[in-house]
Length: 389
Image (cartoon, rainbow, N blue to C red; front, side, top):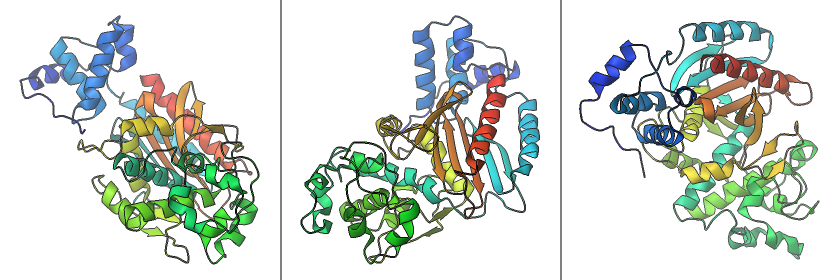
């Protein structure tokens, strides 16, 4: 169910008064003024149902309720502070773009070394969250039964001859959380995998390193199996399904996507779009699966399920859900997608904050500390935003 429009009674006059007084009402300020929690919850939930940014919706509802607050929505010096912060980030040699959106409004859009957020770039494994979101949409549409559906229902004809019986236990959830139990096709095994004649069968033919549902084994082969499943149940290519399903999102566009020898689009890698397009996707997720125009793309329940920690990543010890890494920066829960080289999509739900960072996709980011420096930059962004809240 999509958002409903704001009521058509004369609230805008009251809202104008609130704005003229430079007042706002984010959740923290509501609680600080001893507004009962039940009223705060009603206001915030109501605001998120309105066809506007969350802060604007909160302002409207507070104006109607006669609740006034002091403090500007975003202090005028915050963009200046963020600009200064990014000036210092110029020493991150492979950094290409940083785009910061707060409550649906772009605060900062910075390019480095001639790059811009309108230039397509390979977002690498950050695309895994797009694939897992498509699984959620397929479930919403009834094309798949649910996250616990065994993949044998769909891919049994691709199973190896005389397979390990544990292959029957692998579910969609296991693929999305990197808990299929199969040996990785990523890392040192990636080159051998993508030079095979059939990527789906090769991924399924890997030996079991652990039982399904066990330890995390990061493998792009798992998300490629998801792409094959989407192709099978959706009756079209994953790329066309993405075009159709994400079409209501302004600025969303896929500019390049590699295919396997059978024509199946590679699930979770070699996927190009502009940073602005990735930001638009992230904003839809931050907004509970709804576009800025109020159109439902994926259920909010799916997003919540995607952000449940199901395992722990060996990449820094952060939690891992359905393609999303889960951590905490500056006392705020953060969900992020990470692609090789430093392709980052960060979402901080409590602050209504979405940040995209892109970097040279051909340079490493994990073992050399670069990803951690991006995390540090994100932490400083959060601290700057939070200081104004």
